[in-house]
Picture 1 (cartoon, one colour):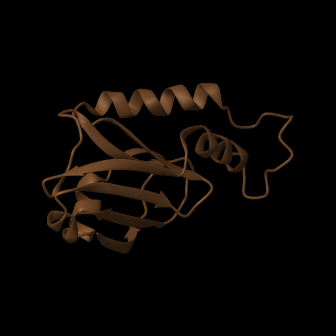
Picture 2 (cartoon, rainbow, N blue to C red):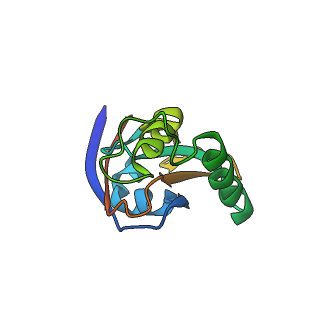
Length: 140
């Protein structure tokens, strides 16, 4: 059993959904040594999230942003937590809905994603800053 772990620091990105698959692969090249295994990517923040979805059409990522802004609007008068502005509580709710980690199978030294799948950083803040991930891969 081989186990590898790396902290990945992502540059600041604007609010929205961003494909980060290649950044994760680049940060942990040891994945190529695993014939069969698993990779977990965990985001260490409460106002951004991760998911796996369409990696080809930018319109999918735009529609994700539109949908989540409708589903979890800013400036709801019922929110109590608004310490960092109107996008604060909605960002926490969106992150809770999407989740803080994704798990990807590894086969023959590569992520075994579908043809049209990519890993998204889901940035829910207007000014979220840089983001940190813990990437852990293990297998034979």
